[in-house]
Amino acid sequence: MVPPSFSTQIGYDAPVCAAAIHDGHALRDDVRSAIALSDAERLREEDPFTAQWTNVVETRLIGLRSRFEVDLNRPREKAVYQTPDDAWGLNVWRHPTTPEMISASLAQYDAFYAAASTTLEHMRKQWGHFVVLDLHSYNHRRDGSDAPPAAEALNPEVNVGTGSMDRERWAPVVDCVVNHLRSTDVLGRTLDVRENVKFKGGHFSQWVHNEFPEHACSLSIEFRKSFMDEWTGEANPAHVYAIRNVLALMVPKLEQALHQVGD
Image (cartoon, rainbow, N blue to C red; front, side, top):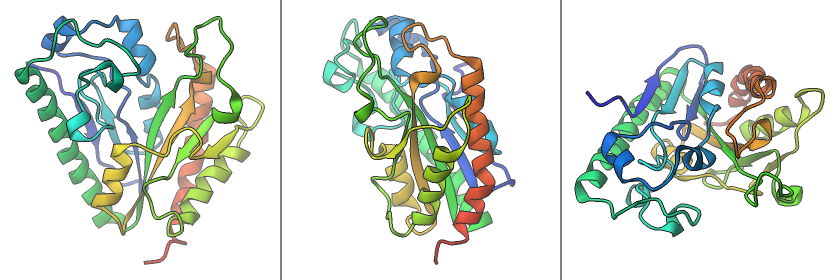
């Protein structure tokens, strides 16, 4: 039996869904036998620990497979990496992917988006307006573990991507997120939070806005991997928990912000 490629949970606690679609690391057997990357190389481009942050709410969408098997944050035609240009210059495959392998991966992609549609439609019916926290992390030490990190001017600790939404309509929600993240204590200090500096948001958030244009605000929140060593994959547990706590404190504020969004 093939393990599931994602998990979904529908809750009733808040008009907020938390998604961690790049948290997964597992591979199907056929993909594992064909892939040229080591586990460590894959992990470096995945978003470990983000699934832990989704437990701040009951409604969750979590990817359980590596993005190198199927990338749920790319358009369908780009969801299976084919060339190094698709994957940060990495040679992903020992040999070209087969049609059968691609078909199996795209079936997982389609199943995820069908489940996401069901989950978010439930939220629409239950709450009317709702928020999706599309949680990710990103690398800032690509030159090596001993090399200087990337310049902070273009690499904020938290990047809030809002590129695919009606920013004016959802301003109360976006401002709530940015102001909360900037003002909440994390290990004795506040975070450097900026909007659309590193990323403007990926396909998943764009899909949410296309499917639920009047009802959903999806924010692509990218945490710089300052909470972990991106080369060893080891996390600072206190830092991971602190981020989770910041998100938990934000949930009731989001519910209040949604009341300020007009019909």
